[in-house]
Every structure is written in C-alpha cells, then in structure tokens.
Length: 263
Image 1: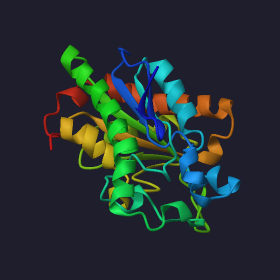
Image 2 (image 1 turned 90 degrees about the horizontal axis):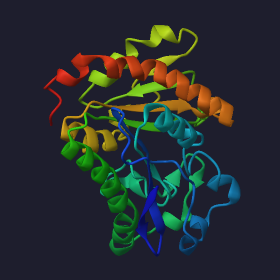
Image 3 (image 1 turned 120 degrees about the vertical axis):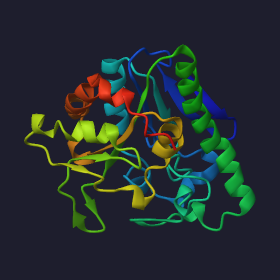
C-alpha cells in the first residue's frame, strides 16, 4: 500500500494492490470522513462528520472485499468528500460544497480562489494522479482493464425514502452497466436500477468520464444503500452480490471488443 498527498492535508489516496492482475481497477472516492486538523472540522459537529454527508459509509469495506476477490488494484480516498469531493471537477460547485442535506458547512463558506486552488492541489490532483498511475502502468503492461467505482447512499434523502438498493450507474459508455444489468435475475430479491438514485445529470459520473470514458475503458459506478452495509458481514455479503453481476460481465469477450467507447 502506498499513500499520496502533501504534508498540510496528509495523504489524499491509498493505493492497495497496485500490481493486481485482475481485469478491474477499483476506485472509492468517498472512503473516508477524515478532515485535516488545520481545517478545524470545517465547523461541523461529530454527528455531521460521521454522517453520510462526509463520506460513503461501508463503501470502503465493499471495495476491499472486491479488491481481494478480483485481485484488483484499489485507489481509495483518505479525506472527507467535504474537504474535496474527488468525484467532482474543480469547477463544480459541489467539489467543495457550502451546503449539504443537513445544512451549512461553515468551513467551506467564502473560500477564495487561492483556498480552493490549495485544496485542488492537495487533494484532487494527487488522487487523480494515483488513479492515472495505476491505469498507465496497466496499459504499459498490456493488462485489460475495466474501471469500477464504489459508493454508498443514504436510504432517506431530504425526507424521501429510497427503495432502490443497488444502483448501476454509467455515463455515455453503458456497455459494462448493460452487461451487469442483464444479470439482475441472479439477485431476484434485490431492487437494482440503472442510474439510480443518481445519474449523469446529477454530476456524479466525473470519475467515470475522466478515467474510464476518456481512455476507452469499460466503466461503471456501483451505488449501494448504506443501511445494507452496517457491519463487516454486510459489506462482505454485498461485495459478493456485486461480484455476481460483475464477474460474468467481465467474462464476456464482447465487453472488450467494442470500439465505440472512446471519447
């Protein structure tokens, strides 16, 4: 495992099993709720810092299980999405949000251009560099690669209950999502949907576009409702369910022969 970042903010990313030989590279942008001491908790209380607004609870556990099962490299964020959301471009208002579902984020209010640039340089650039380094290395070795990002979502958002349990999300390249969705019959008791509870229109597919679509790699974003991930056993079970959709998709040679995914 290696860590990338800078002294002021600490490591931006952990890279696990960088030389894994499986067909997948895993990315977990919202793996952590750590806020650097210099930012004084962004003015939030413990409840907010431990809630879904600060990270994706359970997502890292699922990603780690997938990494081991698939012999896949995993790049995981080391800092809270509230410091910088690595699934957002620097120009996106939600890259350093001033409000969340639960209210204001005082430590992000009134950031000037210099403060924003500091976070881009300290968090976003090193995180993207970690992903690119793994993908470049695999390309140089001729290892075929699908990009899979792992997330979780809250079961209630702005007072509305979400029934979907697993979301299979894609941007302009839907080939891996299509292949996985064709296997949902193997999980008949799960509510699995395309581009739910979010989709490209919600600005959630930045990593897929940047690291997957732009390279012509099959890519997909997995969203799992976080009430299904409350224990280590839950996370292992859900990783197994994701594999039941993902492994047959990766074994389909048509996934790798399609030439229409390049941006």
